[in-house]
Length: 524
Image 1: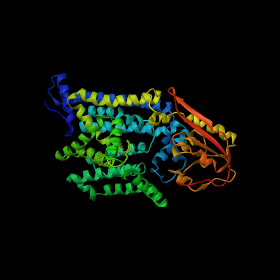
Image 2: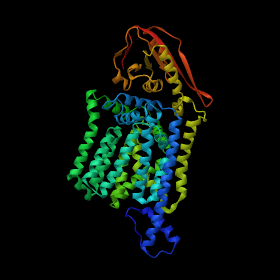
Image 3: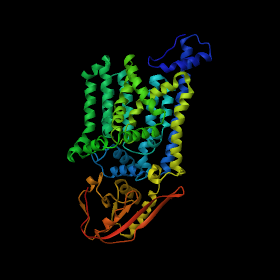
Image 4: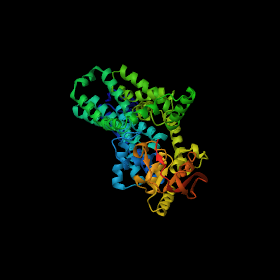
């Protein structure tokens, strides 16, 4: 019997076996017909899966209030710039685009994520299909969508949203370049990497994977003397240029912040750092899924090199630099759970291939059930708050109560003649006041001029005799008394308790401060 199979499609063995069982096939045409039918089945299943998860995410997006971070990125969109204090500008640009269509609504803020994750799923299906056929592609997309990280990224917009688009599309284009190198595809890759540079600094880890793949395989080294590669380099540089220009204009503040925030030694015990890192990855990716990503990523790189399999090597090489960097950094400093997770996208097909091999459903159940159970618990908690976790440790409560904040802010704003300056305690809370209270940018300020407010309003002085409304949500020790010393009088605070799931999540406090003495200066 003769079989037609891509040289890297090791997973199609199981498909051939099933086809041979279905009939006594004696020629290649019959086998090909069976494989085509099987491919169509898995493609249909993939599109059904993608649609089902999209509907779930749309429901979550419309049911829950913005997170404080989302409101903060919405504030980016209201203050267009070449870059920002803590992130490049792409997330703000995307929200600006949808604001122009849908206004200042939760849907406008969340549409980038609702669009991004289905595109990422399509790319994962294609990676798996290229590696081991449509069945592998379906399984790869399935296990990705079952993770808590994908559940959150699917409807919450952050800088990872445009980064995921650029990373996943860029990987697909690079795999195409390996098979069909043309100047046009190099231009597309350069554009995507440049857009990635405008999305999040993590995009820099994409570059070593490309260079390593080109260097390892002699056939690909000619790219270094071709026009396409250097055009791509030029487009990457152009993409990074707005961020570089902005930083040069602001004393390199964003670069310095990222180096100190993400890479310096935290001075904590090794085991505490490692425990935080492992806990974040195991809980957001899956207790079985995450270790397998490392095992199969390293094995994929080695196998790709030994077999002279450029596609397999490239998939592993694109993910491993970021993964290994954050493992090292996670042993010496605080690493947020989402920071390394973009790297996992091109490694996931190897896990999908392993699950698909031999049609072993136990592997799928072991990985899918553990990650999926975590995701189900997260979604249940987000929607119901049924698990009695302390509000200070429950990130689900970050999507509750901001509409009540907005109502109280609007009411006080009307009473004070819509001229008061709203002062928030913390950058994200200040942005929430703006979004849900409908407060214009020039009437918002963060009390310490922290984060981007050091750019938007550093050294700002409130006019003598002016009125301000101070807002805090109990996350930190309230500093309203210190602020009130700069005013001649203050009203009794308006308390807005946020109650959900049978418990008080927070109490928002709004205090009208009257008659500014001319002494309050917003300075970091």
